[in-house]
Length: 391
Image (cartoon, rainbow, N blue to C red; front, top):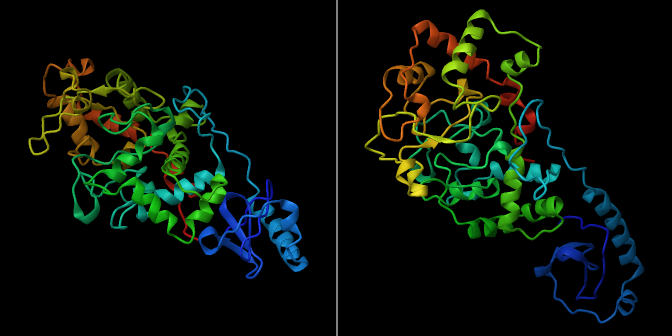
C-alpha cells in the first residue's frame, strides 16, 4: 500500500487498525498499511482516549513509516509550460489543470494502458506511436479492438495546447474530454468510462499511483482525463530544422528556400506558421469516398455550409505522419501535391484558398517537399521523456 502524507493525520481505534487520512489504515497487528476493506471499523469518540490504546511498539512503527511516507510523498515542483519564442499564447487553460510531473507520468502510463479498451488489448499508443509523431502509419483508417475499422485516419498528436477543437470534425472542444471519444467509440476501444475506473481500482498499483499523483487514492474519470491531458500537453514539437533556420542557427538549401517561398505563396493560408495549421475547418477539394460517405463537420454542426469540411492538420513532422488526409487515401507527399494541382473537386463549400488552380511544375513540387521535410523534428520523435517504461 502507498505511504500516506504526513499532514492532517488523525487516529481512530479500529480492530487492529488506525485510520489515517485519504482512506488508508495502519494495522498494529500487521504493522503495515491496509485498505479500508481489510479493516473492521469501530470509530473512536476522542483522540486522547484512542491514543492511550496504541502501544509504544505501534507508535515506533507508525513513526518510522510516517517519516518514510513524508519522503515518498514529497512532490516535485510543478512543471512550467514553456511557449517557444515567437509562438502564440496557448488556448489551453493551465490554471484549471497546471502541469505536475507526477500527473504527467500518470498520463503517460494511462496513454500506454490497455485496460482503457474493453478487451484490454489496445491503448492510445496503439494508434499514436511516437516514432510517427504520435500518428498511425500502418493503416489508412484507425483500427480498434477485435479488428474493427474506424471511418477516419488517426491524426498526429502534437502542440495540442494551441488547439481549441479536436478530432477531424471538431466534435470535441476541450482537451480534457478528448480521450473519452476513442475510449468509448464502439469501433475503437469500445469501453465505458465507469468500467475503466473499476478496472483501474481493481489493480494492485493504480490506487497507489493516483494517490501519489493526486493525494487521493480515489480514482475518478476527471483524474484520468486530467492525467491524459497533462501528458498530451507535453507533446510539443518546436525544434525542427525549420525552427533552427528561423532562429538563425541554420540555413535552408537553395531548393528548400524556393520550396519555402512557394509554400508561403500557395499553402500558408491554411497551414499558418509556426503551428502550420490555422486550426480551422476547410473543404480541400477531395472527391467523396462513397464507401465512407463522410460529410465531415456537417455531422456536428448540421450546417450545410460545413459539408465536406475537415480540420486543417498541422504539417509539422508531415514526413513521418503518412498516410495523409482524413481517410488516409494518399501514401506520400507527391500524391498530395498532385491532388492540389490537378484534382481539386469544385463544390459550394470548397475552401476559398483553393478556388484558383495551383500552377506547380514537377520541380516546384519537389522543392516544396524538400521544405516540408525541414519540419521533421528528430528530437521530438526520439525524446526519451515521452517513452513509457513499465516498472
